[in-house]
Image 1 (cartoon, one colour):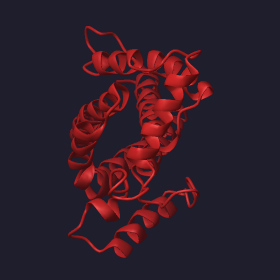
Image 2 (cartoon, rainbow, N blue to C red):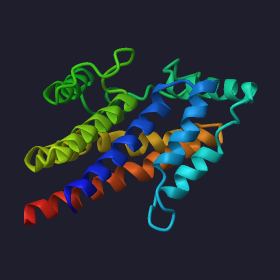
Image 3 (spheres, rainbow, N blue to C red):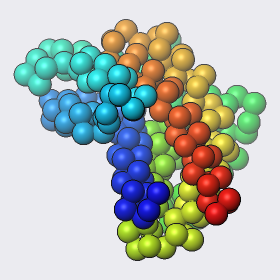
Length: 223
């Protein structure tokens, strides 16, 4: 692919990760639902070639209508129950890597995630939640993809490839270490079809992106 095509790929990947992060970080409101409808439509690719197209469409279809205030309120309650870290008896355990990876030290994991952010120049991504929140980790990936996009725009292939390698490393060291088990839990515990769809979409999207990174880096290594 030439630089223009690589720019487009990075831009779409950034938009997808940002959208996934939004699902977990932001409690639904009328404004958010309206924006999500547009974003889900814009991120979707050609259904004939994009393996995520069906999942994106199903997630969009599960959203309440913008004018259905009562349904949006119910969705907001569900978001809080699933991701608000209220208590194990009232909802799921927190969507934090340090909680979900029980075998690893919590403080060390949070510090390691924060170090990735700082090393990449993003010291503070979302100050309202812990740095190892799933939404923050996904937003970090969105920012890395955006940075990669800018490198391609400047025809700086060296730094763009370094960004790709950083993305792969962060997925391997952190996101993929816990996201599948957590998202399967969300699928089984979510009462609203929208969040079951969100979990299914993320379960497909993150491993697929990891495979794409491997393919792209292999091509650059061979060049």
